[in-house]
Length: 232
Image (cartoon, rainbow, N blue to C red):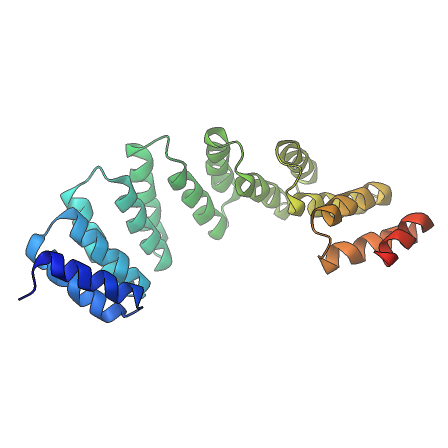
């Protein structure tokens, strides 16, 4: 019989070689012998890699029972429930994570994304707002809030959020793209062109950015800019 250290070494070698079933066998034997938080967590993590979510859930839950204060494990349980589209349970576990670690931004991010997926913009916005209060440079949260506004025809609110995002991080190209679209819809092609130029300056190889910039430069009769773009 292999010792625990030998099993652990064999399991990690199997993982590196992508031999998931062998790794699961080794870590499963360790969890059976030790029945501690770390062994159940390692086994569950490996089961996730093998896409055996129900088995992984069982071992994450055992790890959490052995150490109920470990927020990382609680979030993992919630993520698997979301993977299984068991949304109420996913929300329940993420809220448990929030309760235990109110300054940990991850659970707020996950909750916002779940509510986006469920088509509940008010609740998604509530959690994205909390993300931004804890992590002001989270561009995904800021951009997602703007997209939620656009999806519900709250154009001025979306424009304000996008402008605020760009103030925080002017290198976030998707925000310039959305502002370009909003500017053109509002009848301001000059502003739209300026936004497309900003996006193109950030990613000169993007064919959509280049096409849109050329299109508007041609439409506005900006021959010098058009020549520069076509020769670039």
